[in-house]
Picture 1 (cartoon, rainbow, N blue to C red):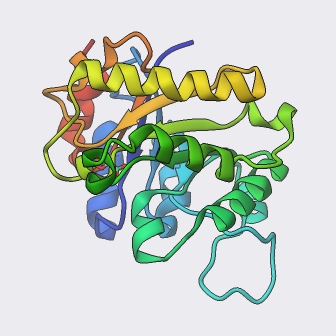
Picture 2: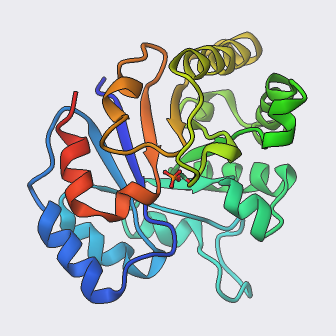
Length: 239
Ligand code: PGA
């Protein structure tokens, strides 16, 4: 299986910029890695023309109903979208999403055959008080609570230290390796399966190669650098 690059555009790109981005990357990305693009939800349909797998950045836990502004997993499935990011630290922080809601969103996405990309990670104060492993284990246990073991195989985990997101800082390569191994061990001990675990937080064209070389890392989740088509072209062909 190829390692994975997931591009999280967050709330960026105007319409004309999205069109020219698609134009630049269409059929142009390297084929060393699998690529999933997560554009703003209003552009999901546009990006289906990009030739790459598409994911949403968010999803709600109900299929339909009176939830103004929300994104339905059933609607995503009906558009052929196979992935969704769930539990990103920006959603946890700005939109007060807790582990219980994240758990419901994961169950709903899976019910609709959408693979959740579950983001977990410690805040700076948790890192500084040596609570990283405790925090990660607690997020994993709550977010995956009661998820059917057969469906669990479709979950992708993204380890994103909150302090590394958008900051230009990353853990050391050993640090990434050890934490990803720890996450894999936790999942393996509890569910007896191996899930893909990605690293996210200040990944760019200059550090992607070093990070992808870490054996335990199954791919990367890229935010800021993902809205620059030329960086994406470079990252997709750097091994
Ligand atoms: P960043 O964001 O690459 O800008 O640090 C990563 C993310 O939030 O997924």
